[in-house]
Image (cartoon, rainbow, N blue to C red; front, side):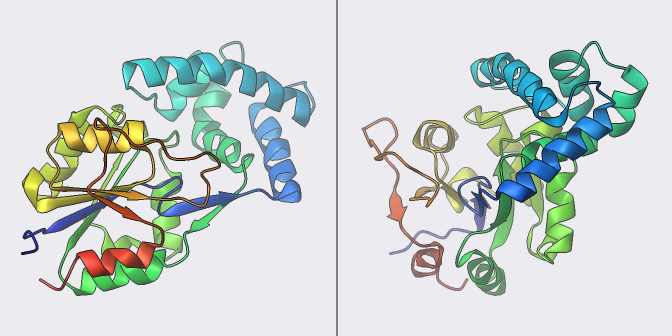
Length: 242
């Protein structure tokens, strides 16, 4: 008998959204990022500086399971020597452009159809994602006409907690008024997503074999998902109408 799941939480990067490289798009993002910062460096030099400084930030974030907001990210970690007023004014756009230097993000194949159908079937839908940037996801949901389907959007850049810390899941469950056993988590990272959801006693942990993954998946007893899917629409076989 299928458990009575009521809510589905989606990871973003590598799961609901896929990133693809595009040289001209990424070049334009580097140039815009340099322009916003007011740096005297050229776009490529400034990008390399930011990349170098992002490494210790990322190490801290991964170790502490914490995330900075946009202003702190640029003022404390990435450009501490630059004009604070300018950084404060442009911090959201700077983070957005920095993320675009990695490529163009779009909804994964089958993602929109699956979201729409799960919503039609009566499930509460939420997003739980580790990422920098306080405004990009809300803008994307609105622009892609997906905001109507999600009753909870919990981002590490807003709550300052990263997966696998179970508290980020608890925040999302409180927003949807659901219990852990009533929830399904869909994500692509064994170490971060599956272990975090498992610790929070999420009812079903689904691992999506993301097209972004370039290395073999190594499953063991500590990170073993309840379900493994190759295509997003396979979720519809797991979750019948309520």
